[in-house]
Amino acid sequence: MRVLYVTGIIVLIDQAAKLFIKGFDIPFLHLRHLGIQVGTTIPIIGAFLHITFIENPGMAFGIDVGGKLFLTIFSIVASIGIFIYLFKIRQEALVIRLALALILGGAIGNLIDRVFYGVIFGEGSLFYGKVVDFIDVDFFNIDFLGYHINRFPVFNVADSSVSIGVVMLLLFHKRFTAAEDASSLATETIPLPSAPHDLPLPASTDGTNLSNRREGS
Image (cartoon, rainbow, N blue to C red; front, side, top):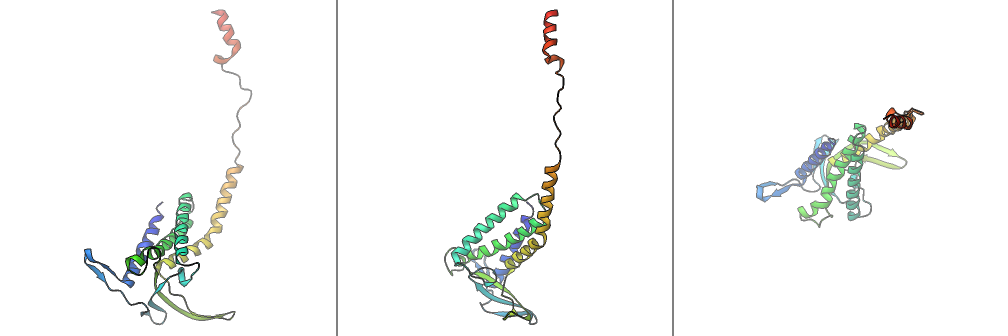
């Protein structure tokens, strides 16, 4: 399943970006990077794009449902489910497999934060780490049904990968399922060759000929 290379690349880019923002210290390799302080904002493109370091205990884009342990276990189960489904459809349309590979990469990227970051950085126990978010995008003010939005929740590379994968599924899944249905229908309607009827028995197995041979011998 070569599409899993995409998953691996997403995980590597996501973790490299997070460690660059948060910082790291590997004594036996003499590697140390201080990163930036939580809450620091660095402008990148005017007022539109900033690097803003926050730590998110919940799901993507700051959503928190069910508590940390529930989110971590749910992420593990979901990742395993996506991997199994990718294996089952390994011969199907590339665009669907690519979408699922992106979602899987994003899920694993944030899962690493939740499972290991608490222990690695001495901030909590296993399964209780916080997700590093840092991409801060400002956009036009939106007023809709009484809700006012002028800034997108801070996110990371893994969140972006999941979002792109979901959009791809929404755009192409209907076409994929239609192709599957057409293929199944074609398979069901192809007539199978029927077995021939009333064929004469070969001479070697014909009972009369065998009897005649015995009498003449």
